[in-house]
Image 1 (cartoon, rainbow, N blue to C red):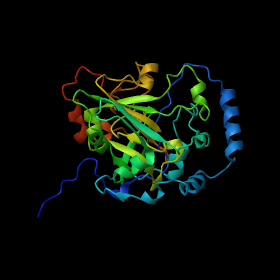
Image 2 (cartoon, one colour):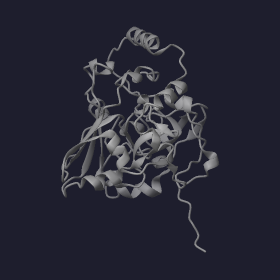
Image 3 (spheres, rainbow, N blue to C red):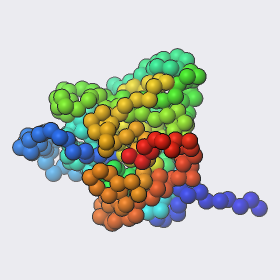
Image 4 (cartoon, rainbow, N blue to C red):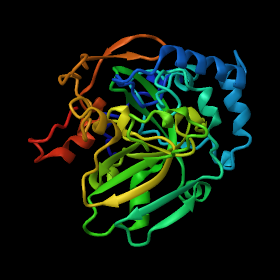
Amino acid sequence: MPIRRRPGWDLPAHTLSPEAAVLDRRRVLATTAIGAGAIAAGALGLRAAFGQGRDPIGWWEAQVGNDPTRDLYPAARVETYTLDRPLTDTRETITYNNFYEFGSHKGIWQAAQRLPTRPWTVTIDGMVATPRTIDVDALIRRFPLQERTYRFRCVEAWAMAVPWVGFPLADLVRWVEPLGGARYLVFETFQDATVAPGFRQSWYPWPYRDGLTIDEAMNELSLMVTGVYGKPLPPQMGSPVRVITPWKYGFKQPKSIVRISFTDRRPVSFWETLQAREYGFWANVNPEVPHPRWSQATERMLGTGERRPTLIWNGYGEYVAQLYDGLKGERLFA
């Protein structure tokens, strides 16, 4: 009888986190004076516009009925992708979000409802056999969706455990046929100042961009995400499509993607442009390498406040550490 070895990221399902605190874009100190009064006024205006006290879960469930891909959910779970902790509570996850396009605070979920996610297209260009622009619903339906439960770690030292729904990024890479010299993917997110006030903050290098190497993109853990908790993504979490690489800090995982470019030049990311000393290209999770302004040795779980030891590579080392062989001169963990 064959013996199945349980890999390091394949952890007992009963230990999953509640659904509640998931979104990656971390708060970096903006050395700018965004007035607290302006932020407060904006938040009050948005509560009035979207309904003060509205239940975020009810709001989300009401919107799901209008999603053109709603029939694809829930997706079949890949049972090998289970966790060592309970799933984060849904409410925590969908209301504690980094999305600087809508504000530099965590309570942007109502503001993000302004983002129109249809019609939406994704352009794939650069060093590929056939550059193309594809409707997002056609893209989502092109590849079978699956649910995977992953740890998520923000550079701000908070964490969550989330059941993402999507398709392997490797499937997309193979489909577009990158040219031989292509070494990197660059993800670019939406830019529309009419719905997102952050774009009026000229000190930020909009649009939001970040990148991966081809090898990172082809890793089995890299996921193009279209849903969460068995439903299509809500806007504040990166609808209609985002990327998840669970061994990296959250800011490496762009939301609301409109362009994926293949290139032979290593990109300089949004946060690297702003604070290269604090946010590097690789951004792999390591408890022993502190952020210049705080420790990364532990992480705070959303919803429960539990402090857990941070895991090297966020616990996925046996599947990704080999990607970085021969890069000893690189700043892999910042």
